[in-house]
Image (cartoon, rainbow, N blue to C red; front, side):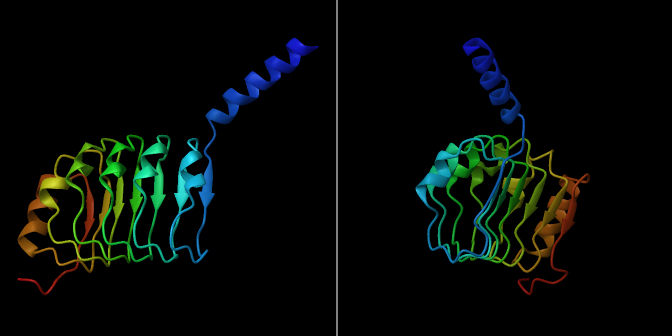
Length: 171
């Protein structure tokens, strides 16, 4: 009987490892993310949108299964470099924040397919995004990205759908 219980526990454990685990703290008026969130290493989708966050903890690196990170509609000023250790990250959603630049190591995220960062203050993207051949969609409207940089990155990644502001007012 004990052997059957152990086998059942082991089997269920393996099954749960293959499941997507979504964790949402959307609209919770958080000013910081509880440390316990970063101990939930099996999370594949984390939604921290519509809070009052001004930064994201470097402990984000502990979520090594994370595929989708949504930190939109906060007051975040920069993305921690530890975000670049999320090697399974496919979607990075950070629109409507106060981000000025993307970490240069973002180019190491070889599985990244979506970047949704409209409504920030990002101006330079070419060097960071151009190595990302996995990108399918990039939304960076309402950022002061110059038209020549928009054209350059669009030409470099023709397989990627880009949305930029038609005129950023920064020429």
